[in-house]
Image (cartoon, rainbow, N blue to C red; front, side):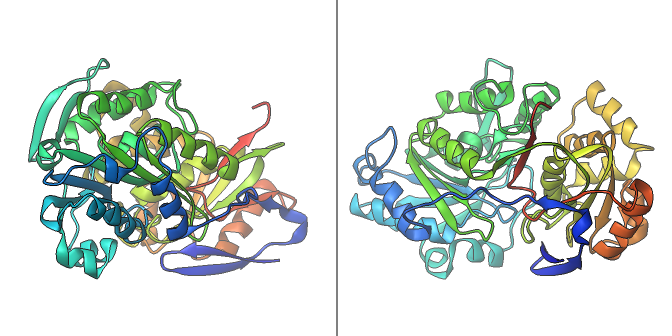
Length: 417
C-alpha cells in the first residue's frame, strides 16, 4: 500500500506491505457546522465568558494583539481581519493597534516573514513587531517562583488580545490561552523558570488543571490581564475546524475539549514501529520543532521499538542552547542527568529527545547531513523504505507499523497503559 507524508513544503511517498500495517493514526471523525473564516466569525459573535470584543474595548485605548510566530501553524492572516472588524466597530484606529509576534525563545523574523504571517494589507497599515527578551518589564513572581517579566509594549497596552492555535504540548498540556504571554512574550529567564517544571510527572501532554506547569502559565494572567483570546483548532490540512473566543480560561478550556474529541486517540496496544511526520512546514522547519511529533510518537511505540521520524529540518537544530546540548553531550543519558542537575532552556528539548531514546531507537529521514544526524544520536536514512527495511531486520519481518501523518497534533493513548 502507498502512503504520503508531509515533508517541508512537499511530501514523500512510500510503500508498506499490508501484513505489516497496524494502522494510520488519524483524527477522529467530528462534524462541524462551520469552518475557517466563517467559524472564526461565529466565535467572535458568541464569546465564552465575556461580552463581545467590540463591547470591551473603548475608543482611544492602546490595543496589543499577540499572535504566533512562523514556527506555529496559527492562521493569523485569516483571524486578524475578522478580529480587526470588531475593533473598528468600537472605533479603534489602526494607529492605536500593535501586532506582536510571540517569539518566546525562538529567532526573530525577517520583514518578509512578518508580512507573510499577517498578509500584505494588514502589514501595510498596522505596526507589526517581534517580542524582545531585552525589552521587558518586571511585574512580579508567581507562587511557583517564576519571574513575570513581559515584553514592555504588551505591559504598556490598555488591552491585550491573545491569538493562538490549540494543540497538544508535551509538558504544558495544551498550547493556546495564556501561553501567548508565558512563554510567548516573556524573558528567557522567566521561560526557563516555568519550563524547569517539565521534569515533574504531572507536566505532560493532554493535562490542564492537574498540571503544575500549566497552572503557573495561567497564573501570569492574574498579574497582567488578558482581555480577550481567539484560539483555533486546525485539521490535518491546517483548516480551522473550531474557533473559541472570549475569556482566557473558559474559552481555552472549551477549545481543549474539542481538541480531545478530534485528536486524542485510544489504541489497544503499542506498535513495533511508528512512522511519524510533524505534518510538513512549519512544524518540521527544524529539529527543535519536530521534537513535538517525536514526543507524541513515543506514546504509540512499544519499549524497544523503533520510531522513524520524517522531518525536513531544513533550518537545522533551530535554537543555540538546544544545539549546544545536542552536539556536545557524550550520550543521550548524559543529557538527562544534566537537566536534572541544572535546568537550562533549550537543553530541555534535548533531554526530552534523550528520554525517547530510553524507550525506542530513532531513525531520521531529513535534509540534514548523515554525519551531523549521527552526531546528535539519531540514525540517518535516505528514505522511508530504507529505514523500514532496517527496522524489519532489527524487529522481525512481521513487525507491526503504525503511521502518524500529523504527529504534532495526534495524541495516542494506549488503553490500560
